[in-house]
Length: 167
Image (cartoon, helix red, strand yellow):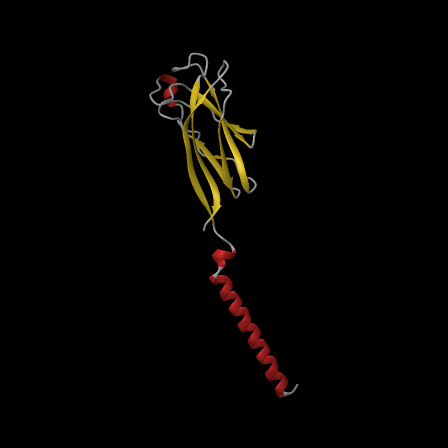
């Protein structure tokens, strides 16, 4: 191989290394634009009064919200200060029942009810497909406190965590 061929190869190798370095620097500099960071966003919904029709303990009307997520979806129901009887919450995602709480208490409850939780705790509904989703809550009362055998109304009060792209 002649000296001129070696010199030409060295120039090509140097050009390729320079190009790779420049491309690497461009990718690193623009990484946040090429691959935006996903962050978790928290939102509060309610309290909103839900009136129940019919008779019995299961409320025929639901508290419903729509959310958008990139896959991460957690929820938490918090018993509002105005509740005066025990309640269970049934969670629905896109119309399908996915989970229910144990019996939740109310502030100022006495006896066995004073030990009941006042929140569902964080409930993981994901991962879900990226996009819009409907979350609805259905309440089921229990005869105690101010509930005399029929749930007349309750308050929808929900905290939701979703994933979004960091801008």
